[in-house]
Image (cartoon, rainbow, N blue to C red; front, side):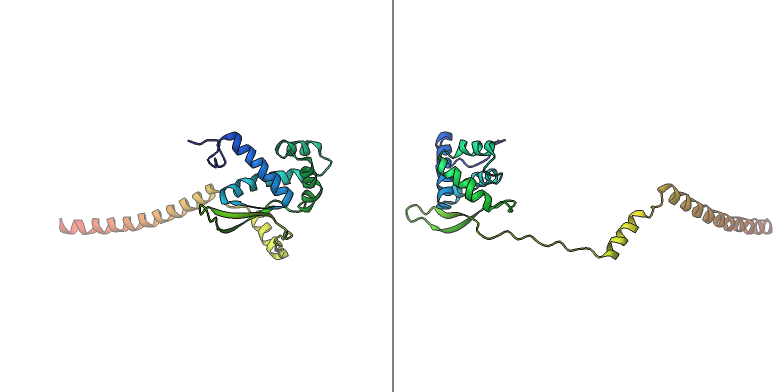
Length: 186
C-alpha cells in the first residue's frame, strides 16, 4: 500500500529526485517555459504552483520568501518570482501553469510536453441574478409550516374509522337478512 506517498518516483532515488525537481523548477521560473517529459512536467507543475502561491503573498512577506528559498536556492530567481510572477497572478485563484503535449522524443519515444506559465487573464462566469418573484416564492415556501406527521395520522385514522362504521352497518344489515331467512327454513 502507498499510503501518504504521493508523487511519482521517476525511477530515481529520493535525493536525486529532490535535486532534479529543484533544478527544473528553478529553470522553469527563470525561463518561464521548459520542455520535458509528461511525468516530469506534471511533478514540476505542482511544485511551481505552490511557489507562485507563496509569491502572491507579496515581496514583503519574509516567511514566504524563506519557504521559497528552501526549494529555489538562486536568490535572483526568487526575486523574479516575488517581483514579477507573483503580482502577475494576484487575481487568479490557481492554475498558473499549462502543460502542452508535443511529439515524442526521437531517441526513446518518450512523450514530451511543454510546461509554461498561463498568460491569458482569468475570466469568471457571471452569476445569474434571481428575479424578485423567484426569491419571494422560495421564502414563502420556507415560511409555510409543514403538517406534522401526528396530524396526518389522526386524520387518516378518523377516515378509516368512518369507513369501519359504514362497513359495520352493512355487515349488520346482512346479518339481519340472514337471521330473517333462517327462521323460514326452520
